[in-house]
Image 1 (tube, rainbow, N blue to C red):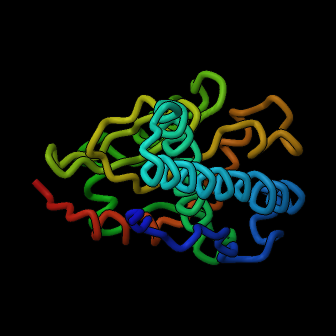
Image 2 (image 1 turned 180 degrees about the vertical axis):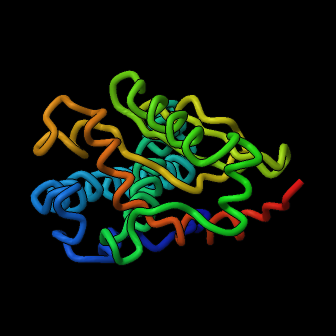
Length: 212
């Protein structure tokens, strides 16, 4: 009798938490539609396909394609979950987007980076300098009890294992090319106007941060 194969509910594309045009003029409506509806959807589809392939491999006992399947799982899974956070990390300018962090998040940034402006320069420089496609991240590491600025090549490479992402910035060209062309630095500078610091602060609290 064949062993039953565990099945999971398929991943689905979550709706944006705001209208496509909500982040204008910093991120344009057309980019948001293409980015969310097409690019993010492709990562959702790729993740489902990778998980289905792994389920078939377990059922058949044929793991000849395991290296490729695990690579696709990491790539598409990270692409999906990074984007889920990216949309929530932003808000309409003047209605939750922009400004500076407050409370524990502001205190942690001061302790770990020397102040908000120092952090901004660090994050900006790291994000602009990502080679090819990738992400800029602010992450909390619970073992070190420290905030780190990190970068991710593609969606998943170069980050510190065990880090908990709090704030992510997509610097793949599809995130900005329609409005900013090859001017990634202009896009990153404009993006500060839509950062949802309240969402970032909630993530820090959930990550279990404690001030030194």
